Amino acid sequence: MTRWEIKPAQRSAVGVLALGGVALLAGAIVLSGWVDWSALGRWARPHATSLALITVGAGASAVGGWMLRGDRKQDKRHAGMSWWFVVGAAVVVVVVAWAAISWLLGEAALAKDAGAARVEAIKTGLGIGAGTTGIFALLLAVRRQWHSENDAVEKNLTELYTKAADQLGSAEASVRLAGLYALERLAQNNTRQRQSIVNVICAYLRMPHEPPDTARTAEVRLAAQRILADHLLPGRDAFWGQIDLDLTNANLVDFNLGNCRVRNVRFGGATFIGDAAFGGATFAGDARFGGATFTGNARFGVATFAGTAQFGGASFTGEARFGVAKFLRAASFGSATFAGSAQFGDAAFAENAQFGGAVFAGGAQFKGTTFDGNAGFADVTFTLRAGFRAALFHSEARFRDSIFGGDAAFTRATFAGDACFRHATFSGGSAFDDVTFAHRARFGGAAFAGGAGFDRTTFTAYAGFGRATFVGDARFGGAAFGRGAGFGRATFAGDV
Image (cartoon, rainbow, N blue to C red; front, side):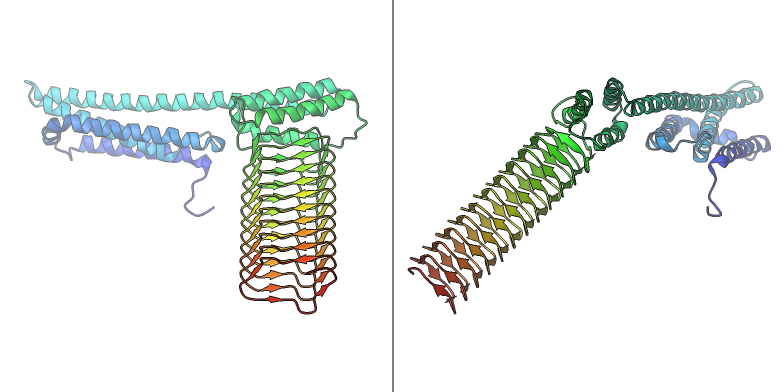
């Protein structure tokens, strides 16, 4: 604490001293006759309305500022009065008393017994000042009463919260269920407590849970999931906005957040038993699904990821549907495993999209997908068909060392940046017909086991096919090479 800093416990004493000092100063001025009250009265009389408005305005501003300060610092209240409030109140009291005395003295000068009238004027003015002091005292009493009632409410809320949280630890499923619904009511009626209550519900869902659990326990866990879903759906009176979810390593059954809106979510290492529905959901913050396991279908179609989307190392056993999803920040699917079909058709990646090392055991569909940032597909394995028809790659596209086990369809795709397919393996047919390569197209060392179609393909910059191997037919009918093409040491086993 600095030398001039006032401790909270000293503020009341400072305020009282300031008020006493102002009062003593005012009394000394009145008794000493330093002020020509008649002259002040004559001056103040024609300005009485303006002075009154200024005084009332100053008092109202002081009270309003004090009340706003109290609202902003509800969590930092102290028992004593703020010293600046006491000083401000003292100033207002003195100004009001002075203005009243000045005006009354002006009236007293016109009376027959001027001396007696002056005494009465001073008494009346001081009485007005005392009345103003009473108003401030009343406001202070109201403030203390409000804090007392608010503290009682906070205490009751804390007790209810603690009791409900304790119920979640009960061995009886019915008691845990009652605790969940009690927490839900508390969160609905107390906005400031919602995130804390959601944290408790998430902590309950993160507790160890084995599939052979009792039906009653499963019912409680499903109720916890429904509570989250019901209150994260926008457009409803029960909607809870600006909520974060932390369900790291949780076991979730038929989890459904379809069309819901959340802020930051953490599902890293979570296991989704059954289908996981996130279709149409909005993730306003970061979405972390790294290492998550989806045992059923995973539906993220039309979802919006406003923050980073992390699915690195995730395992999708069923279908993974991300069609028409919007990724506004970087998206990572590196080393993810897609056992079923992966659908990213018409999805939009505003920043870098990283799929390096991913395995697509089922079909991979990226038809019409837009990649505004770099598209990283290096070392990716496409076991079945990979469809990139009409996809738009606005930045660099990297497919180096990738394996296409089935057909690879890039027909009518557009590569606005560099396209790298070096050492890629195409086991099935590869279709690059009507594709536009605006920058370098690098296929050096690539192996085409099936037919390779580049009909009507436009290579605006240099096209490199050095050391490429064409086992099947290679078609370049109608292709245009703007800055030449290199086929040095390339091998053609089929027709060209």
